[in-house]
Image (tube, rainbow over all chains, first blue to last red; front, side, top):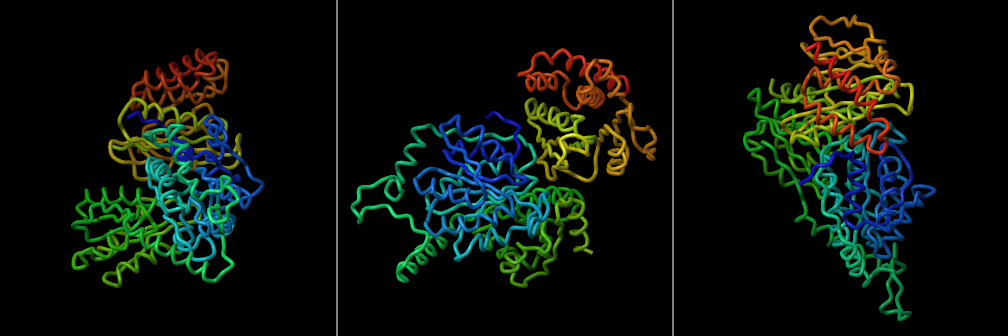
Length: 358
Length: 181
């Protein structure tokens, strides 16, 4: 396995190309500009298409169009840009269009700060647009994980005919780390993936209405709209099997940290340092933040766990709400937070754990 | 074993390139974990720029810590900004052409290299970062100089004309670093 040293944003883009992504449209915003920049150079090499749209709305709408024609398509942005794209994301979810997008998140709300933050958890997991739709949301904590998640995201999107979100942050996007890249899908494989979507994709059909492909982001008949909602709800329920979580040193832990993405890898190193001092700390890291791994937290032995420490680069805490749902008041929950572009320090986490044991 | 390094200077002094060469060489030549994290403003030249390199036998937690084992400062503002992040017994590498020796700390090791002047002597002010990289590798022996040179050679592949100058700069730095061990 050859390791290459890559920047998170570039690695995400390369992973997408290797997964067969042949269309990208985006609009510049820090700290994810290396994603469109990389696609702009790379996609022409594989007969793909890169477009820098005139706006976020235009870009997501182009992705909606390309994906409607069966092409593996992607867009990317950062926090305020994602908000602008929410109309198109909701349309893709309504029309059941498989596409992948990444949020390399930064400080917020509003224009916020250009530095890394985790201020978009609730938007990403609960309401990325109007209409109550849901998506699989993956939260990488290393560049390797960002690569693997992006590569497989296209399979999940196609399987479900639904958008998939990679929720990363400015640290994962900007940092460089060794990665092993996944295999490049051959042109035949990419073609056969597209071919399999002919049954529903808008690729040109005879004008026989019963067999015609329809891409509909809404319905005129109330009964049709309700049926679409019910079908979507059934899909979302089926995701229980897709929950991914890492439980690290939780078997005998007295203090359990909950954290995702960049905060989780920093928390993990704090756990290692605390263990060296004989302090029994552990970490639960949601890998899918939606669906959320409630069971992993709910099934902790609360006769042993003294407290939960929720660590996020967000003020106020957001994932905390899901943690509370799982803990159900069986032990105290406190938080260790920073925001605004400040990056979580492992000393902060270590101090917070020690405070809980006083 | 984990080493945290911060490289800081003016934008345009090549601090990112210095950090990237070191991190990239570590990735290519060892099975260690390594991260590179850049931090800079909107400016391409002027302003301040700094990067963090973490080299570790275990998984890297924070790609930028607040306690440094080694600190390289290429200009005076960076010294003021980062001197207190250096741990006791840590090593400070200064561009002694423009950074004063008075650091206010007597619990650290100091390695001096007048890289701005040396680069001018070599005929190109831009290679100051490659000299400093040589100083760092020569002093710490963190990875073998041959591997670092292979990485520089590879990265400069498209501009072979620049190789002799960079080779001279790197070796000058190595010599200076080794002599202060």
